[in-house]
Image 1 (cartoon, rainbow, N blue to C red):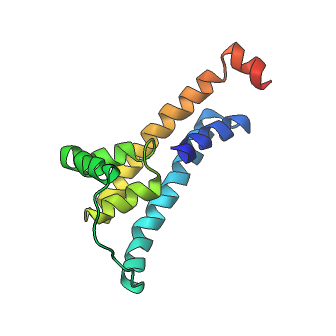
Image 2: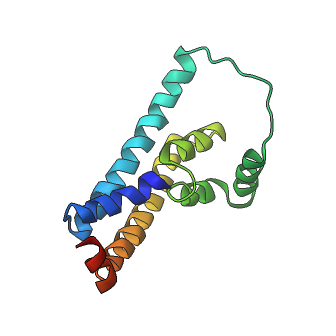
Length: 135
């Protein structure tokens, strides 16, 4: 969540336009998603990762519940705000979602959240209280 919100905040602080904030935020997320979608397969095939006994934690149970209820669309929707782009990509890969679907769902979700957060932060920074606060 922090990384995805930091993009619009820092973009606004740097004086970027709303369009620039949206594009940079979305590009940052998609770089992680595409990279881990394709590098994940390479890591699985080239590195012998020791798999320990599976333990279900409350967080894992929530992820499985979201997956059962909403599928890959639900994971993609929650990725920018609750998970990280890397975490969402790994979860979708673990559930054997096709690479094309991972990228397309994350693309749409990332774009929507970049617009919502970018516009919200831009609007908040136009409020006189925040203009005085941040100078």
